[in-house]
Image 1: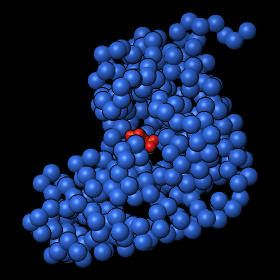
Image 2 (image 1 turned 45 degrees about the vertical axis):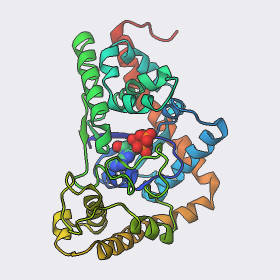
Image 3 (image 1 turned 90 degrees about the horizontal axis):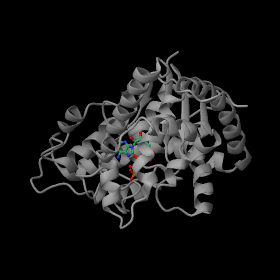
Length: 327
Ligand code: AQP
């Protein structure tokens, strides 16, 4: 079975971009691959977050992932900080990476632009992300389109490490969904739907009640020409709605476009399709939330399994660079 690794930040509740861009593939991969999925809490420390919030959102993210369809019998779900090899491996890779290549990361540029003081962790976190991936000898990494550049960095660091120290690391391939790889903000269709941009009407949470989904889609920004056509560059708002409708109903966006003549019916059907897509997930979320002990058990079991694999890879890498065996 190919090994798969992917991660998500502990936002607590996921948005539709996370779900369609990544988590749906995670769920599907459980049937065919050996899957490791990490809640990357160390990444959350790169921005301001209250300690109590971090703890509760980490647990809430696990509940959302289980509600979305992850099954601890068929995948390993764990919290990054509970596997200490992630930070150790990140150091080995930081000593391989250059300032120039990290400075070119567009997510760093975007996120640092919005703040007066930029933390070192925000600059180096793509290396920690590379460590997350490379520790699991993962061949495939299912992510949304926004992670393309970080995945390329992970590949480059693995190749460079292997060239210098021998064939220690597996060089991973990123995989992207055909539709839904980049879900756009409903109010600002030029930018991706995102948890860190304050856009309450532009972002659909997977736990939003039906009336909120209906309202957000109805008020989604489109354009003035009234023509329903799939054209992500020329008509980003309409195309985003078409993608949401298409991916929720298992069709192609340009085929769906032919069925509509006006924005009103397109919006009504899109809202309905998203509500139906999320309904079973919201039902599972309600029943999982009633059993708080369950998640702690799942995460403890996941960390133990993850440590076995990560520990083995880290020992190989540490030995290759010349570190002594632990005393
Ligand atoms: N808008 C999106 N469309 C498609 N896929 C997306 N992903 C995120 N946003 C979209 C994918 O979701 C996975 C987990 O994301 P994450 O929350 O850990 O990472 P992120 O990219 O930091 O998510 P956000 O909400 O966009 O946060 P910020 O604002 O901090 O950047 C990843 O596979 C990602 O591709």
